[in-house]
Image (cartoon, rainbow, N blue to C red; front, top):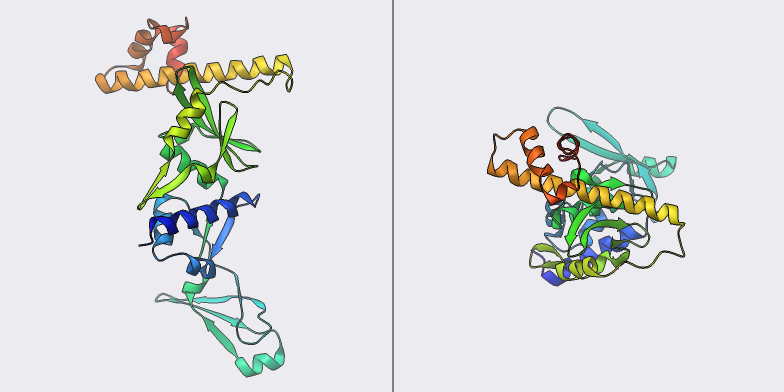
Length: 266
C-alpha cells in the first residue's frame, strides 16, 4: 500500500484536476500507472473515483506518429478482444491489426459531485438532502452554538463554504494512514465564526427571503432529529403520536402537529 504522504499527494493532484474542469474528469490507464501501488483501489473504495466506460480510442505506439486510433472490440461468450488498425494503407499493410490489452482501455472518473458525496459522508450528513445548483452543492446543515448552518461545496474555487466563509477543499481533506479524514477543527471554527456582512451586496428583500429559507430548513432538521430520537426510543410509535409530542416542544416554534407530521421526515 502507498504511504500516507504519497496518498495525500495523489489526493491533492486529484482535487486540483477536478478544480480545473467544469466537467467530470477522466483518469485513463496511463495516468493510473503514475499513481502509487494500491492508491487506485483505495480511492475507488472511498468513493473518490468511480469506474467509467472503456476508452473508445487509444494512442498507437506502432510508429513515431503516435496517432490516436479508434478501438475495435470483439466480444464472445468467453472473452473480449480489442484491436486498432492504422488508417495509413502502407503502415496498415506492414503492421496489420494490432491487438490492445483490455486492461489498457480501463478508465475512471471523478467530479465535484463525487467529492461532494465524499465530504457529505465524512460530515455524517444525509446525502438525500443534497441540493445541486449551478455554482454550488448544498450538502446539508450542521449544528453550531448559533444554530444550524448550511454546508456547501463551491465549484470556483473548489472549496467548502460554511456561514459565508470558505476554505479550499485540498486544505481540509487528508489521509492518516489509509483513512480519509476531514479537518473537524477547521469545520467547527467556520461554524462558530460570525457570517460576513452582505448588506452592501444584496437587496434587503433577497436577504430576508434567503434568511427565511434557512430558518425553515433548520426548523425541519430539528424536527427530523427529534423524530429519529423518538422512533429509536419507541419503534412502534406512529408519526401522528411523534408529531404531537414535538408540537409540545420549543422546537415546534408554534407549528401545528399536522404541519410537523408533514415535514418532520423531509
